[in-house]
Image (tube, rainbow, N blue to C red; front, side, top):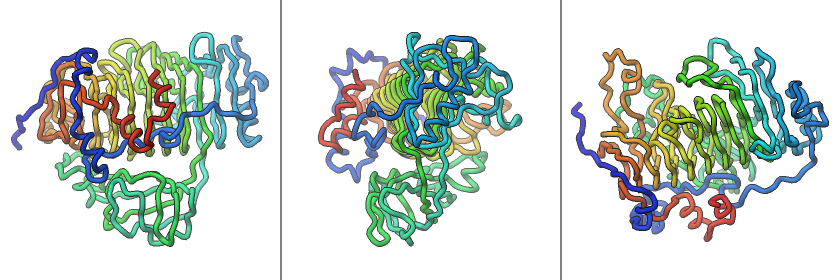
Length: 526
């Protein structure tokens, strides 16, 4: 296959000198006129309560960890005391597990495989601040993987692990379009208003649609043989016979002949973590996938099966892996700073709908964390808003078929990708870069280069090629260091080299949907 040589180049501009002269975005003007037919999705349905309100100061019974045996600023490990306080809060039906200021030793013992577990709804972990005068959670020893042969099975120090099953299952009957909020089921009798559901599909017949007719590589075996996998979360607003009205729009078209399934889903609400400084003890130069220690030995937090959850005002120092939200719905991670020794990965949204990653800063030693904020594993409507990365820590689209992601009003390298080559591409349709200040110079970035490395001795080139694999991303208002793209494999390419107005697509779409910008947006921008 002959490589196409059409390229588009972004030149060097500074934000201060260019934004005042920015262009009005034609793509956004088209969206305002008719959102249902525009190329741009509506990314505004992301974040706590779908962006409609700010994260409140949660109230509830206080469970002070110092009353359960966790004593700050001494030489005795506090693991058992913290877990005891959490168990007490769970037994009471929920509450705020509070850490008075000071330093807590959370993992002094070698050989630990299981961290602290939160298994019930309505639990808030609250510290006294994320700086030296606040709450420091110090993890001296790394964790071991649960399966020694699988380095990715390392537990986080704190794991929200809520599980309650649902037996409700049916199938979709009719086609639907991205942006629709109604679907028709074969049998809706097992569901009620307020329920969460998963729309699931995996079918190789769907590959052409989700990959925009682009050719896959033959080594992407799972994608080629089993097909792309969708697992889109929604909440039911209303049911009329077998027609369900959703609380939020579909992020993808639905072709009923692909055998879509609908399953009930139970998610925990009332979860949050705030005002903590988490310190690991990772001081080696990061080597990607060297071993379980480098990948995840010091991991702070994993939150699974949560709705309208939040993680805010957190500092992470000398860690390998930061925070992950899996199987989440309408969650926010905001005001988070990474510093100290660079590690493996920052934050991730997996198998989730509407996760907002906001006001995150990579202030680790240059060149920064290995992976920046991540969307993976069928996640959709993920928004990375006002992120400040470095020369290495670009956003990470970690394969396993994420789609519909926005990188908005940020400054970072264009990519910091990863993912198993059998599960490529890194990202499917509807990725948009909006007013991203590019860090680093790159020439002829091809988001869908043909497979041409089969005989290469270089494993990186053989399995991944030179660049990330993304289905025709939209590049709108990207500026900063010079970078060029193979235009044939772009979606919308607009105002390259100079920002556009509106400055933030997420904010502008949220304002259109709500009629005005909510107060929490103005507070967050401060």
